[in-house]
Amino acid sequence: MKKNRILTIVTYAFLTFWALVVLFPFYWMALTSVKDYGAYNAEHIPKFFTLSPTLQNYADAFTTVPLGRYLLNTLVFTAGTTALMLVVITLSAFAFARLQFAGRDLVFTLFLALMMIPGELVVITNFATITNLELRNTFTGLILPSVTSVFYIYLLRENFAQIPDELYYAAKVDGTSDFRYLRRVMIPICRPTLVTITILKIIECWNSYVWPRLITDDANYYLVSNGIQEIRENGFGRANIPAMMAAVVVISLPLILLFLLFRRQIMSGIARGGTKG
Amino acid sequence: MTRLRDSGFHLKLTDHNSYMQKLCKSDICRLFPDLYKRFGMESLMEKQNNKGWLYLLPAILFLGAFLIYPLIDVFIYSFEEGYNSASQTFYGIGGYNYSYVLHDAYFLQALKNTFILVIITVPLSTGLALLISVALSSIKPLQELFQTVFFLPYVTNTLAVGLVFMILFKKTPYSDGLVNLLIHCFGGSSVDFIEGPYWAKMFVLCFYTVWVVMPFKILILTSALAGVNPVYYNAARVDGTGRIRMFLKITLPMISPMLFYLVITGFIGAFKAYSDAVALFGTNLNAAGMNTIVGYVYDMLYRDSGGYPSYASAAAIILFSIVLTITCINLLVSKKHVHYH
View 1: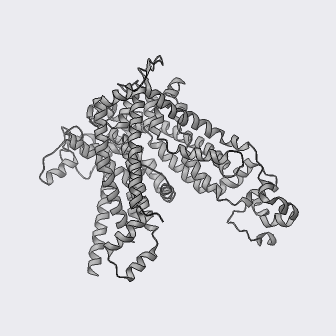
View 2 (view 1 turned 90 degrees about the vertical axis):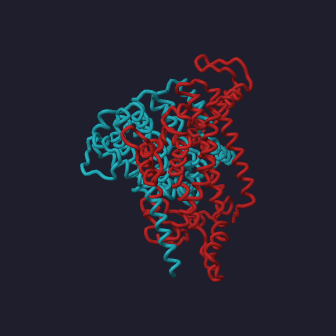
View 3 (view 1 turned 90 degrees about the horizontal axis):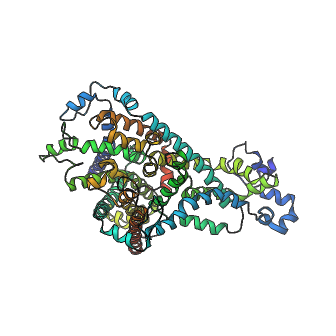
């Protein structure tokens, strides 16, 4: 019994240690963001708390650099990409799961094969395509290449396929059209999967960095990832770390809130086949 | 209504989808016995038509334009010598782009950085994730809280949180930074991790990469561990098997497919490392000596040295030949050691 107790203590100590490693950067970012600029620079040895928190840095983050603009851009980009993607993948998943047509299974297999193509390989030509269409520094150029995801089509198709055929036959007897059936029956039944896909896509859009960086060089179209890089390199001047941290908090907060709200959907969705790293 | 309810077909459905409840297979059989016998439901209802293609059209257009065409095009680019993106002309076809890239000092530096990053972070993060997941699944109280906390880095913006890491590790004229403070406590001398010696920078990059990839691995391994049938453990316990032996002989083989999946995706992900490095060292990675292969590709495409899609293509193709080779080796190794059930 005594051996077991020690093991339990060691286990908890280990888990607490890793929790601290994970949480500490968040704590530090929140702490620094409320430290006074002068006080921060006067600290030769960084302090672990502050007795005089200030919101001045947040005001600076929104006035000195166009952080509000970056947030708005990201919001437009995320909403546009996610909405378009949902339409495209729902239609395809419906075709694959429910409709009958020559060549369906072959096309589905080809779609699955497309999942293996790494994004880094196709970025080069997409960059050229968007540049040639003169769509750089536009939302269209930002959004277009990422409105389809074969993986989400696959995920949704699997879910659609679980709906019993009898419902479809019943709807057909009633003279319901395919599209109406998709809208009134399949989408409501598969809402949980659609919600999960939506959230995962939102996270992906909010954090996307490479494509927006290639396609925008006008700060009016920067997303938050590029914005924060811009802030770091020529924003407040390199020394105003507290204001920089305030911007980081503002950028991180929406996703953290989203995560806390939809924790279960996000984690089960990613366990089913998301990737990162 | 009762007849319909008893038709042996139950679904948990809300009332507003009214017609779903109206007719079921058995009802149709009863109403049209001849029809059903003659053709069966399938042929009665499932008309073959080409409307399906209409539904697929948007996806096919987008995938064709932004995935299939670029995939073919990147190979063509990589063999076009002296391509000029302004006039869109080139003067020859051959392997010069590849040889240029392979002799470019920046590419070799990027190759070295990426390999070091992969070799350090993949085993380290997978092992650590396994340890954490095992610990996590052995406790009851606070399990969910720990799970939630451990998952947080997944939903954060890599670029934004990278700045926090930079500040923690950076040495400025005002302050040595928090990590150096820690080093002082243990009697070491301070190092500038962001603009200092190569190994210090590599350490921060590896540390941040591991921090970023851990949530995914912990999540996958925890659900794999939860999926192991407790019957095996109970049987082993009856036999008086020790903890370590149980882990080696039951747990590890049972979760080996998932562990292997993580190793493969880990390799692929680490080879594509880029934004972590940008977050820590800024966009000019060549100057910092911390560029990665993907970073090299993007720098060739765009940025100060940019405008060379041919070199970028060649570098990208080299990267994915490496990734493909390593994945194949992984698959071969796994055949011997992974137990699929």
